[in-house]
Image 1 (cartoon, one colour):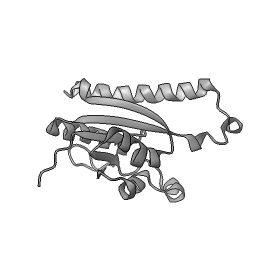
Image 2: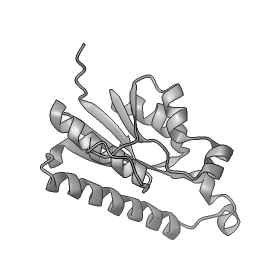
Image 3: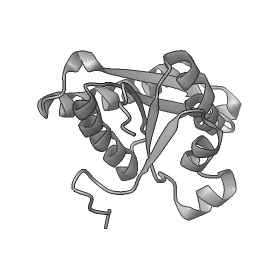
Amino acid sequence: MEQDYEKILVPVDGSKEAEMAFHKAVKVAQMNKGHIDVLTVLDTKQFIGLHGGMLNGDVIYQLSEDAQKYLNELKDEAVKDGFDPDQIAIHVRFGEPKTVIATEFVEEYQNDLIMIGSTGMNAVTRLLVGSVSEYVTRNVRTDVIIVRTDVDNKTLK
């Protein structure tokens, strides 16, 4: 059975693993003539305790701007590698990454594949909050590829 993936979601968090997933997704989308949604989720739980739990609009605006800049840099890399700029969209959301990725975003954009890095957290954080990729794999209703290697199938060192 052959599967054509037309709408690929790639959640990124700035980690090397997430960027490997992004670059692999570009290759998969090129082979399938598909569309990529690149998503970063700014975790609202991280803001609790900062400034007494209150963030002013300037801080939130700057976080959003920094995320947009990062996503645009990834998009520019893909376009430089020959990917059609009209076939890639960038998205910044606020919320809990696990649920935004596994339910809210996929339902809204009807993605048929999620390509996600194996982990962007260190072992202690993963133990405390759980892996986003693990949660997504268990709870989403679409295909998921956990990316552990780069486009040349080499693992991170």
